[in-house]
Length: 176
Image (cartoon, rainbow, N blue to C red; front, side):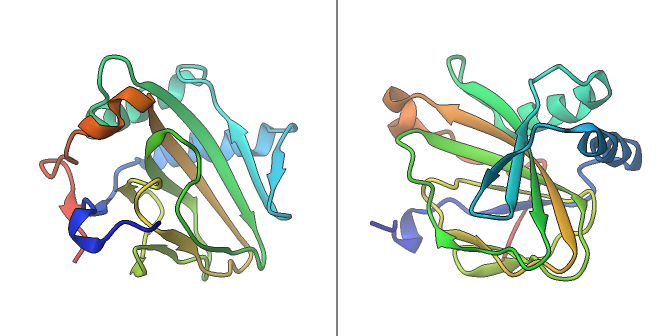
């Protein structure tokens, strides 16, 4: 069952969240990955262990501060690699745990527009969007060429699902 608009928190866009140097580091990591996992035919992902890439420590710290995890929350980080023509239909994540994702565009050719609750969210390299994928329907329009995302998420334990912290608007701007 999809949540009603009145119960959804807003998606937040954080302009210029990642620096040019951080984007270069992410691109370097992408170039060295040899063990991608494949989902939905062309969508590849790779987990980056938190703290494993020292050049991303400041980016991870800002993501952590933006999302404000509870003491027992788990955090994780993934690279998402979308190839030419790939898209993802609107869905909510079906896992039993609540998750907040911070997506940082590392490369964005035309196409591959990200949508949350049907609303298009145009991102430039270095911008991020914060949303709750388990409660907010989201999708990706067909990609042209390639799109690479760094996804930093909080996985809330089932017992904490009902006590979600509201998304901070001090660091980000609400999407209209």
